[in-house]
Structure formats: structure tokens, C-alpha cells
Image (cartoon, rainbow, N blue to C red; front, side, top):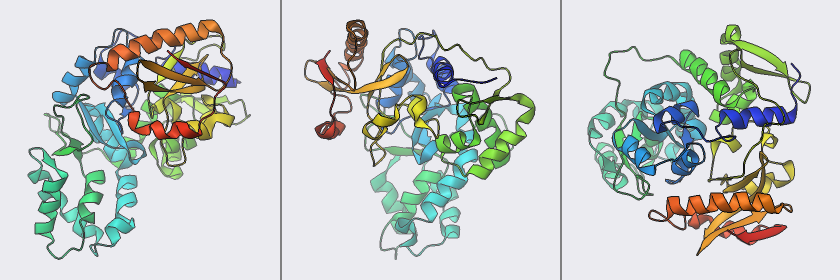
Length: 378
């Protein structure tokens, strides 16, 4: 099938529950979306608010507290909230990337330790993390284990690639900016550890269900993987896939059982939070972000600003201000669109009111360099 750019856009938004909020629970939704970037504590809450009918943030609080959803360093070497049963699989798929990114970094190499020293510390670390520990305690733990080290780069490395999760606590969004850590819980039933290849295939399958049609390069971009393993995962899935032709004339793959939607599927206005995975899922960001606005939305240091989604494409950015939500549109928007955005803004203000009214406020400095065609406080 020859696919248009708009059909790829609509199919992506449909699978991401952004054409219509769904009556789903938080764990089911997180599984469907292959996790939610959680670099900012409020991020998963806004992502689910955008996708679940009558989303109750207390449901996500409870899922975090009971470890049915866990927070860990996984995809793109960033913090993600994932369903507990997915953590081990996703970790197995990306641990080689996580490990290489940390053990080849100068912050670890300056310690003078070897990768064997780091790997050999994992068992003792997991035993120590049978209860939540903060960074100060963990720095002291490694200082005692390696008393002659000039710095604590070993803990900096291990907290990214060892099988750990963040410990939930009494914060407005369950997690704060000063994390504690726990050994990742294991499944009750005895299971053989999943291998990297098998885990990569499962990640590719889940990725296509949530973000397809796509290419191995897209999967590599989404998860920060080397392209050969991503390509091999698609090859191993060949019996489950169908190949279409993308708008650029190149092949794109999808699960044979997956649904494609039509170009004219309506998409209501949305206020996406920071680092929403839907904006970061493909090598070509223009599936949702017009090329001329990419550098504004995705900053050079990797920050991804809260965005206005209009007719399925990023049309501006937003930030909370005293008394409302300031929306900066990159083009002139009709009155009915502003009405839809205002309704979303009212619901958003209600969501954050008793938790963090100026959510994402620490990133307000980016607005000094943002120019818009229309600016309104909603």
C-alpha cells in the first residue's frame, strides 16, 4: 500500500490515543504506549491525561506506589515509566546501550576502574538496595567499597545500567527531583532471564503496535539502539509484518494485524506535556512536527517543550503562567481551535492545581527566544 504523510500522521495519533481519549486503566495504557518518558515527574501524568477518559491522577499514584508501574532508566537512556512486567524485557533490549554509554564516558573512565569492577559491584549494590537509598547514601556505599577513588563515577554509571528502579515517595507527582533507588522487583514466577535478541524482537513488536508503520531506523531512534540490532529485530519479525511504501517511496513496516486509518480522521486540539514520546518516536520528526518548528520544539540540549497539537501537527508551544496557560501559536489559528485549546487548558489547570500549578516552570527560560504569530492566555 502507498501511504501518505497524513495517513502516517493519523495512524500514529490513533494508536497513541490522541484522536480520542479511551476508557482504559493506567497500567493498560502505559503498556500500550510502550512506556512514558518520565524525566520530569509530571510527564507521565500529563501523557495519560491526554489519552484516558476522566483520568484520575490518584490511579497513577497508586500504580507507582504498588510498583505496578515503575520508573527506571531505559529507552533513549532516559527515565521512563513502564508497566512492571515490561521492565525486564525493555532493560534486556537496551542494557548494552546503557552500559556502553556509561562505561565509555569520561565520568567513569576518570575513576580508573574497569568495566569488570563495575559489573562486579552489581550484586552487592542490589543487596544494598533492598530498601530505598538516596544518592548521598550510595556515594558513601561506593566510597567505602573503593576508598581510594578520587570521585564516585562508578555509582553514576551503575544507576543507569544496573537493574534498578526509582523509589516512590510523598511528592506531588509521586517522584521528586532528588531520587531514591531500589533493586528492580523480580516476577514472582521463576523465569529464565530473557536474552537480548528475544527482548529486542519484543520491543520491536510493541513499538510497531504503538508507533508504526515505521522502519528499523525509527526503532533505533526511539530507543537509542544501534541500527544493526534494530534491523535484525525487524527481520526476525518478518512473518508478522507487512511492508508498505512510505510517502518518500521507501518501504515501511507494520504489524500485519495493525490498523491503518484514513487521511481524514479528525484530531481534536491537545496540550502535550514535555518529552511526550509521540514527538520522539521516529527518525523523521516531521510526522508530527513541521520541519521549520523542530528546533523550537526540540531544543539543542534535548529538552522537548510542551506543545499545542492542532489538526494532528505541532502548531505552537505552551507554558503555565499565573492565572492560566499561555499558548504561543506558530501560525494564525481559527477561533474554534482556540476554543478547543481553552477547554483543554481548563482541564489541565484542574489537573495540576493541587500538585504543581506552574508545572514545567523550571524551563520558562526557553520562552525568551520563542516567537509566535499569536499568543493567548487560556
